[in-house]
Length: 312
Image (cartoon, rainbow, N blue to C red):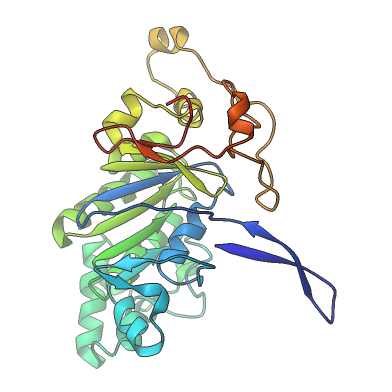
């Protein structure tokens, strides 16, 4: 997913591209939660939006249940959209302030012509019950709710059309810590109840470890490591993953005192001008000459542990 950089006011010409997502490939297995982690601006949200065709990918394919979404248009894509939904990052910006909660949650039912009148109202009230809110809140507006309650409304809207797959785009990063656990538990309960599949995008590695079956680590538009959660935390092979995990606090002063922190120097390179060779070569503490010349191959080192690093 490349975004063009343009110059000029009247006649805009392309002078380059921001390579937000560049050569990313992974599978999500039905019924699992795949965590996608990385620092801000590395392309996590863009990946989620490109999968759902909210962005039209620059190149490549997205296969959902054997159907290539990239080449679907119009009515065929709209029908497929019923099976895919998104929970957005900011509960304050993702709900229309001029619509009541009943209209917000019921909108997908209107768009896909699923139910009308009394039946739709009952479905909305049922969804509010499912996400732990009072079903009589249907006539209230978003400004009357707290951040955690608004995110529950966003979850209810995503569930309205009975989807198979949900992209959770940092659904807890804008919430208080006390509320975060409630939303995580809610998502886990809903997954068990409705057999949902999640792509869970987040910054917080301890949250990702709790909710995910497998974890993908992303850096500057590329996936550098994929493994199941236990393997990734016990045996991280990519230097970037090691640095991320070393920053996660451990609530044990004895362990915390003994372990070594990996401090990354410098800033993340611009996605408009990524480095030659490995994207991480400018900040890697164990960089070699080959890293600055060739891009490492993304290889399986056994047991589904994929890494893109010459030192793996």
